[in-house]
Structure formats: structure tokens, C-alpha cells
Length: 90
Image 1 (tube, rainbow, N blue to C red):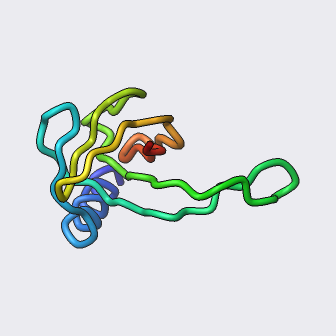
Image 2 (cartoon, one colour):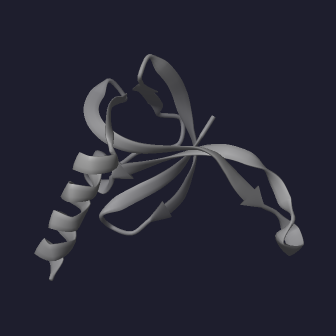
Image 3 (cartoon, rainbow, N blue to C red):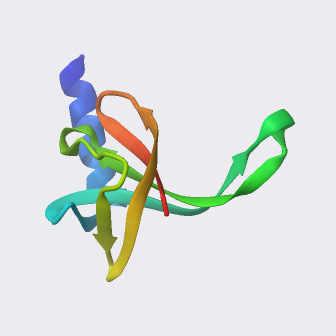
């Protein structure tokens, strides 16, 4: 079953991902901009940029991410499912 998930993530990154550098190392990321972040009681607290990165890259808070000539810093780890890591960008 684990192989099925690995194949699924490989296909997702091949179709939706774009080349990037994380800590100067090449990788593929899926970027999302303008994602509404909710606060207490479901009210919108703001809009942020997120990146989904393969878990084997092990992103950490403070890491530099560059893609398409733009640079961001990993502000927080949002979610880690063992295959991918979703991070908040600043």
C-alpha cells in the first residue's frame, strides 16, 4: 500500500509541482498563494502562502525556499503526513 501512496505523490508533484530550491538543494514544490487562514471561531485571520514539499526534504522553520526567481522563508510547519510536508511561507 505504501508504494501506491509514493506513486500518487510522485504523479501529483509531476503534474502540479514546480522546480524550486530548498536550502539550496533542488526539489519540486506545489505553491498556493492567498490561502485563507482562520482564527478563533472560524473568522478569517489573514491570507498566507503555503508550499507542499516532499517529506524526504525535511523542511524546517527558517529554511530558504526559492522558486521562479522569488524567495520565501519557511515560517511554520502546517502539516506532515509522512509523504509530504505543508509549510507556511513568509
